[in-house]
Amino acid sequence: MHAPLPTTDAKITAHEFCLFFGKIQALRNITLDVRRNSILGIIGPSGSGKTSFLRAINRLNDLHPACHTEGLLQLDQTDIYHPQCDPVALRKRIGMVFALPIPLPLNIYENVVYGPRLGHHCPPRAELDMLVERSLRAAFLWDEVKDRLHTSGLRLSGGQQQRLCLARVLAMQAEVILLDEPCSGLDPISTAKIEEALTTLKAQHTIVLVTNNTKQAARVADETAFFLMGELVEHGPTQKLFTVPDDPRTNDYVTGRFG
Amino acid sequence: MERHFDEQLADLTNYLIKMSARAELMISDALRILVNRDRALAEAVNRNEQQVNSMQIELDELCLRLIATHQPVAGDLRFLLGSVKTNNELERLADLAVNISQKACDLLHYPPVKPFVIIPEMATIATGMVKDSLHAYVNRDTTLARHVLARDDALDQRKSRVTHELAEHIRHFPETTIAALDLIRVAHDLERIGDHATNIAENTIFVVQGKDIRHNIETRH
Image 1 (cartoon, rainbow over the protein chains, first blue to last red):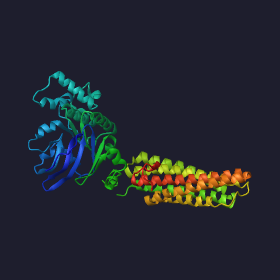
Image 2 (image 1 turned 90 degrees about the horizontal axis):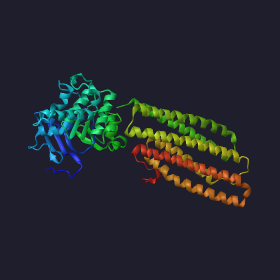
Image 3 (image 1 turned 45 degrees about the vertical axis):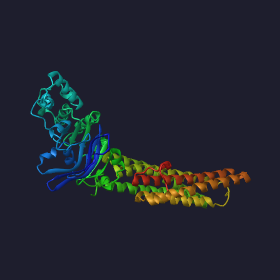
Image 4 (image 1 turned 120 degrees about the horizontal axis):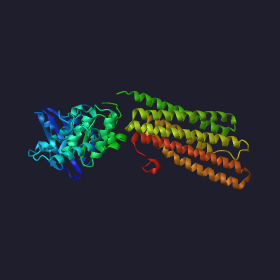
């Protein structure tokens, strides 16, 4: 019914993808590719469907009892919603960082290794040590916490907690990182550190960033998608969307005329 | 949704209109000195040039402030960049008006070289292009902008004719060389005025459509 798109560079492919919560249609015929090793920024006003789309990518919407989908959503040309697709296995490949940082009530070290320890084969201690350092460095947090890895993650600042959550995703060696408003409560310095981390991380990961801060999408995203009332209005190179958007509604949104 | 920023952009537009009106007045005064052989307006031209120079700096500061504080994107960003460039074009127009005024005053030291025909035609075309280009810019009228672009060739052709005719004149009446060369420079300045109007028209198309049509990269007409 829905043939996979003949794209080779796409890590994630949506084709005529629709999402429903009962009778309410949250997403309408979304068709877009997320290029491998790139950052896709998703912008749009409240209720536009950007978070629903993000949560559809790792099937978090499944937790809603009346949720169902139509069309196609693929990871590496494999249908995410195929009955044989295991959502738990999928979520190991697709990590997520939420708007509010939620560290586990454990120390910093244990926060990072919590996921890997849940696996079938818990790595030896030396390997875990390396994993912690590598993940915290990649999240731009190592230098700030390397001397207090055994203090509680809850004692970190908001910006540090958010980077700890990012490090937790990285420790799982997720291929895709989904971020839902990751800097909404952060100061400009913490925001800049997260953005620096994302820009570096795209070499190893594919990143989808939902943000209400259009300037953030302009700064870090390679491509940007503008959602409005469950529809994808425009998707293209970030530079184009913020200089010469094709659709007047995109122009109006990015220039702050509505939203 | 109405934005406070829109009011500031409207202020910027009004400023451009005032600056353009002053530059246009300078050009018409300079041409009157030339045609009527009356230096009375030369002082007004110089006075207005100082005003235009001050306005150029103020307008640049306004654009810089709006870019820094609002971090505009898309249509707003194109309008601000276009306005910075249009501001420069208007200042150059004022400079050219001063050039014409100075040459017109110099020419008063010599008897008229020959009756003017083509230079007044050039003046009409050039001042019309300036007026229309600014009108197109502030009203975001790309049709009018393209009409401005289309008139540039007529100006270039007339400048070539004037140059050719005056060169011939110099050959037959060498005693008129200095005055004839001044007139050739006036024709050159009028042609340059058309070029600046053309640049403003190109800015208009960039602001409205996001297309950069300079240097014939895209079709101009």
